[in-house]
Length: 460
Image (cartoon, rainbow, N blue to C red; front, side, top):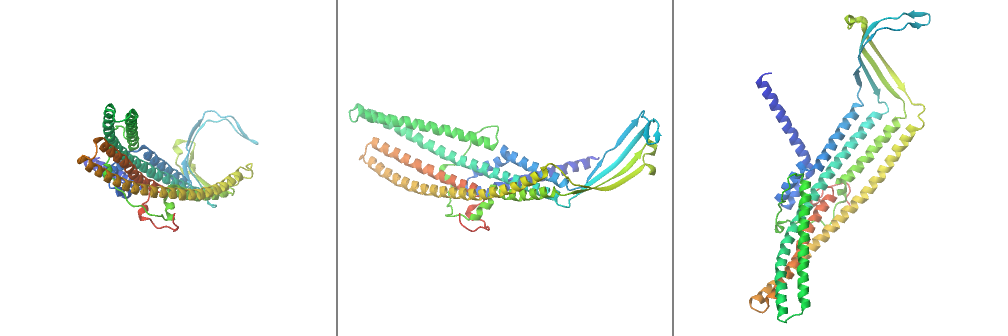
């Protein structure tokens, strides 16, 4: 092979591998639904999701299981094709006994034998047993693909929820650090006030207790921050842990959710699709089990050479061929085949009940998620209004403090109260964003803001 041809071959291999990788990437990104995640206007989140899709071990395992199921389909297809095999024999009889056939006797002999046949067989699939088995395996493949899609929806949604909860936690830590500074000063001023005889010692203890509670709460938040980051690093599939970079709480985007959802959305859920496929699979299994009760017909044949000397290996006198058909029916199996048929029939009934159950469960989960999202939205709206009022009160207190109509101690208490109220707004905003993610997961990873049309028009 010349250098030019070798370079051309290497180039074609590289291009082919790149095309395969690109196809696999597109296939994985289709499950990711980046159009949805772009709605949150967070480039860092989008970047992490792209990294997750490429590196997460759970998603890789799901992809491998899909490939295994694809190979199982190829095996099922192979069962419908003829079998062709070669079973050659080369043997030497060094000393045989006398062989008697009635009155005829063949004395002991020595000889070599070389048999080189090609044999073929094909079961005529009159009743469709092999065809239905192949269809059943294909439905199993489709079910595995739904499991893979479910893994993508769940893993990415869980990561996104952790991401926004991390934003909330960091913002709360910042607020609690401010409150801790304020409360430290309040406790010191209250103790000074007690020294001057202007308050009781109970008030001093109360402020110190508040200070300790703030410290504990801040420590809990920092611990939760570390736990979230550790969990997110694992989901990202990274062996080199690093700090997760998140956007500021103020930059988190929110959007309005619909007041009701189309009932057809349940058909996009992986569990719904899987149970629908399972009913079809069990139907094919039942047909195959029924066909196994009927006779089978196998066509067979062989062609090759049977020589006793190597010099005559491929001569016309050593050529052999044969063909035939074998009908077969099991007359007595102890009831095993009928039992298998009844098991397949019961399996179909079970699949139908599972399908009915998943319909009800899907409707419940979508309803629950939508109700929760509405509640979180209302809480966020109310929390924003409450914080605006509290902020206005603090501004009035600041004006009184500036003109000397309020002590610094009272001013600090107003500031602390404002930060406490802001905590509710911080939590309610992120809780609302997370609820929109939970709703996205509940409807099967589709854009429920632009509800796709379906056969079922009733509202959820």
